[in-house]
Image 1 (tube, protein in one colour):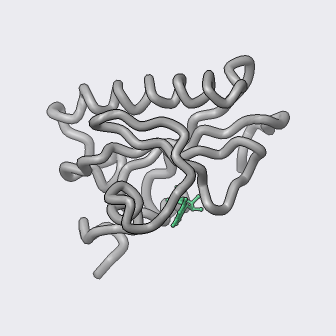
Image 2 (cartoon, protein in one colour):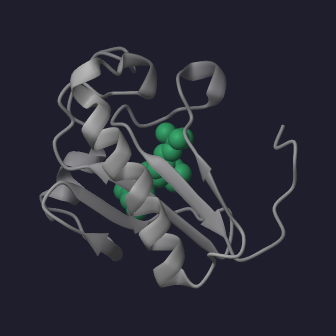
Length: 120
Ligand code: 5GP
């Protein structure tokens, strides 16, 4: 299957708690957990529990507007819980040329160090 086929991903097993993760925030629709390969002292992934076609941001449709807002708000809650509200970055990698590797929409919340811009 191609990377963008919509097949299940590792995040389904994390959401189902079939494989362990370090959970930072959870509600009925959103899960936030620490990235296994952190790129900053704080590196948390925020994902919708129900993918509903959102393999990547570029597949978003009007019906996804509410969950998209919830994900962004959850990123703020994560930053607050992690003590990085004064400076943090939210990233979405969309597609192969942006180095997306898991095809279940996710926001990266990064902080705890000086972030560089542009990221390259
Ligand atoms: P992408 O490159 O698709 O934007 O980001 C995928 C992220 O998922 C990567 O930063 C990678 O380290 C993380 N990741 C991949 N597999 C796992 C896993 O099994 N557990 C956790 N916690 N993170 C993962």
